[in-house]
Image 1 (cartoon, rainbow, N blue to C red):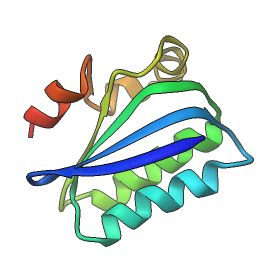
Image 2 (image 1 turned 90 degrees about the vertical axis):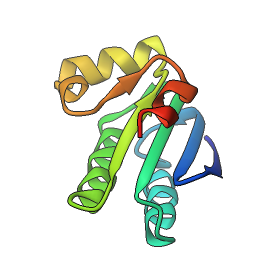
Image 3 (image 1 turned 60 degrees about the vertical axis):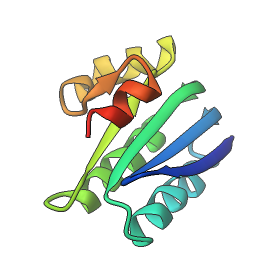
Image 4 (image 1 turned 135 degrees about the vertical axis):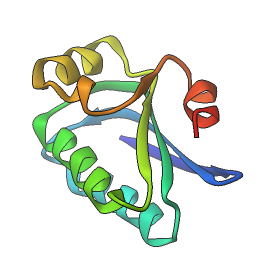
Length: 109
């Protein structure tokens, strides 16, 4: 799993690639928490490069969203087909705003 964080005016973009599973979900969660603890409260999580996400990865996304509650928001961009299926099966596609591109997610703030 690779994680790249960049900042645009008022928005942090977190691009993730590879597999997110029980072996590395803590690392993924630490990266999200680190961005939030730096004061970023508008996050775009770009999942285009994620080819697999387990429930452990979903838990970290939900945990990050809870940390942002009342002060910011987490939006998802271009999840891969497999990740989108997992989001739909768990009902999280109705909890998070999901955008077809990173640019659209960033401009939605």
